[in-house]
Image (tube, rainbow, N blue to C red; front, side):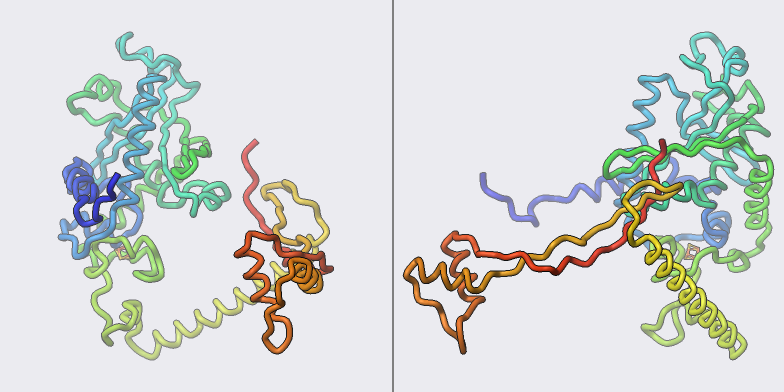
Length: 380
Ligand code: SF4
């Protein structure tokens, strides 16, 4: 088989991007619950601001494919109620799955009832994540923005019910739904591992989520809205934000970081310097704490201790080239020992390897560096 030159093989990404741009979610101009990540960005969306930047959406598109596949399988095999929509005055959203209870199911026509009702109405959000952030997911669960997003869905379902639109009118007719629980299902898109986080619906959290949206809606100008992140170069969310130029503008000095626009006068410089000193102090204290804990654990066996798993890497015996045995081997083979101000051991090693012969090694008393590894303990 002849390999094709790379240039003659078109990439699939332009097609994937084109289809993604035509998705209803991409065309939607109303604030979506999933847009409630950054106040400033949400304000741009609400104001109908045209994006000033592009962003690489490949990872997000792959996440969407995995997400759609998993939900379709859950619908097909378990009869899940998936991808229904809710809408309020300021925000709308698509709920991944709603598991209704027996009482609610009884209000639906028989053919539309779920195969196995839940004990309480539960709103479920499926999030696909990469391995890079998996430890954080296991340790901390849903982020603040993810919680806000799901509380907005659940709150709309409790106060308004499902959106009245073709395909889900039978659900809209039920009116407000008594959501009692929230579930996050995290799926590692690199290895398929699943992690569930489930908890009762908290009305205070729902109020907080509503206030967040309200604060953004009340901004007369997006520039009044708070930047929830530290900006390009410091925060990945800003790196991928399509409003980053609108939000930060250009630095006064070409090539300088955009965050320099936050300093207007000496008072700003004073505050930034105070932050720098505080950051340094926190860092020093953090290092001291880690160092002491690491020392205390030095003779502890690997294992799960509470919320964390302790592992050790390294600490293995180190072998070294046995130079005398190497000279003896050359001697036994009748080959001259290469010289370079004495025996050239590097050359001897290379020659043995080239000939497919083993390099004689000997054990030493040295060990490889031992390092501590702490991971969140797996769920039972
Ligand atoms: S660049 Fe960052 S701070 Fe600005 S709107 Fe986008 S996400 Fe928010």
